[in-house]
Image 1 (cartoon, rainbow, N blue to C red):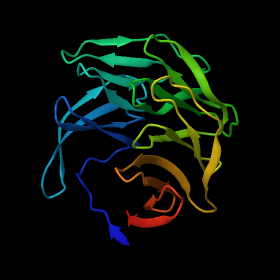
Image 2 (cartoon, one colour):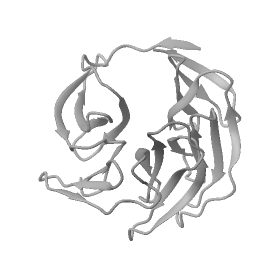
Image 3 (cartoon, rainbow, N blue to C red):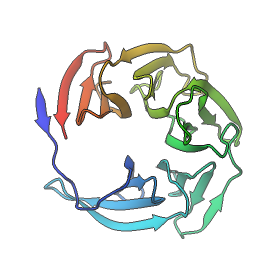
Image 4 (cartoon, rainbow, N blue to C red):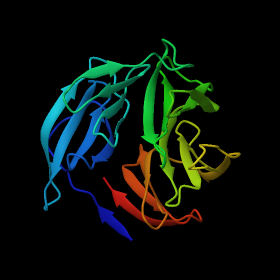
Amino acid sequence: MSVTAAVANDEIHILGEGPFWDPIRSCLLWVDIVRGIVFEGALHPAGRIEITGWHHFGETTGAVAVSAQGDWLVAGQDSLICRDPAGNVRRYPPLPTVGGKQRLNEGKPDPAGRYLIGTLCLEGPSTTETLLQVDHDGGVRAVDEDLTLSNGLAWSPDGSQLYSIDTNRRLVFRRSYGANTGATGPREEFLAFSEGYPDGVTIDAEGHLWIAMWGLGEVRRYSPDGELTESVSV
């Protein structure tokens, strides 16, 4: 099966990424990483997304998520930023392993609310980028320390499997995940690509991955067995 995507709004982004549904405000959030902006958007029946607000953070914004209290957790250049519903902003200390030549990239909360966030090198090829897990108490540990570009994250519907992308190696990893404890098992190669670069990813109720393929103009859907079942041309 193959379908074609339509343009959702007329905003021109430098690097638009990371759509995340805000259930508190019933709106879609996403970022323009380079401009350091978090956008708010209202969904319309025809598929259009009306931009209803935007907020500039003065540094790169790699990702955004929402807490149960309605706070936004934003991945800044090298640290996490919390913006509460009143608009107050608090910046946390820089995360370990994120230096001047790196920035935070894709991040998502796990099923229990821990935050996983990766890094990207700003100075050319790298094999030492990290995927970090930030626990509820603020403790940080490295899940991976040998990535080329840490990117999309997704969990299986039951929270027992974590999928993560290393873009420049063209790999999607899979490993066991303890939703209650945050424990991670050994990783394995789930998908490897010979063309295009896997970038963002999400998962649907049937456990199928939807992967944005940078350089190919496609979003692909893969079954839990790794079978390509659908593609969306963009």
